[in-house]
Amino acid sequence: MSDVTQLIHEYLRHNKKFPHVFCPGCGHGIVLGSLIRSVHSLNLSKDDVVIVAGIGCSGRMAVYVDFNTVHTTHGRALTFATGIKMANPALKVICVMGDGDAMSIGGNHLIHAARRNIGITTLILNNFIYGMTGGQCSSATPHGDLSMTTPYGSLEPSFDIVEMAQAAGANYVARGTTFHANLLDRLITGALQSPGFSVVEALSPCPTQYGRKNKFRSAVDMYQWLKKNTVKLEAIESGKAPKSDPRIPIGLFRDRKLDGLEEKYAALKTKLMDGAR
Ligand code: SF4
Ligand code: MG
Image 1: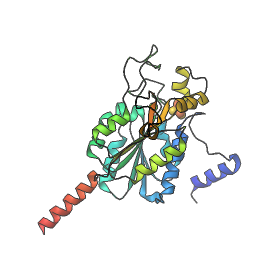
Image 2: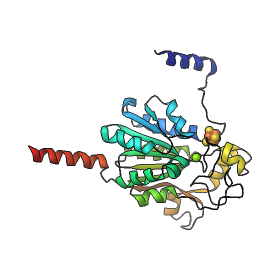
Image 3: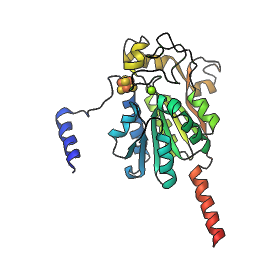
Image 4: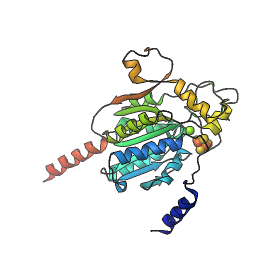
């Protein structure tokens, strides 16, 4: 047992809980739980799993798992993940990013990773704000909402991550929330099994930066909001909810089985090698 492992065991023996950086009520721990359950349910060897995280509160998730982990620069997690996947396609590469990371600073990388349909699973923890860096407006902050940089309400429309990922070419596109943890487990498990590029957006409350500024009284209020303001895609598809339902749809939006970039690259390599013999 290493010194660090020994220290952690010692801490857990006395304190029963693992220390973490997330604020009380933050949704990120729930997403982390879903991710761990999904990896476990698929019997993946932790040596074959790589978590590539960006900068931000969501980026801290990589610290709490005993997989291969890389904590990268702001917005660039997908570029590191692309290199890892192309170098060793056998690895299960999972990118964890916040909305500011994935959609604003790293938006260009997200579009092109989806276009290439490379075999990476991307979790985008959308808390509608830059949490760690002080509560600035991101491209996912809803129109009219308050942030440190939009004290009179954001004048910009927000990006729809699901629409964008589908338009750019991702094989698997889903949206869940931290209120619907079972659904989130299923969506992440599906993403990990999908070939090509998979994206799961997880709406994850940030009571500290977004909640306080937008007059939520508590984290519980934010989870109630998620319950009230989302609708399952199945309900719309089965006619239980109207097609024009104004709530945010959650569920699996696309599930294609097209080959990922790394599979096409391997096939090309075999073809060229065969031709050279
Ligand atoms: Fe979570 Fe927001 Fe706190 Fe970051 S600032 S840990 S996103 S509640
Ligand atoms: Mg954020």
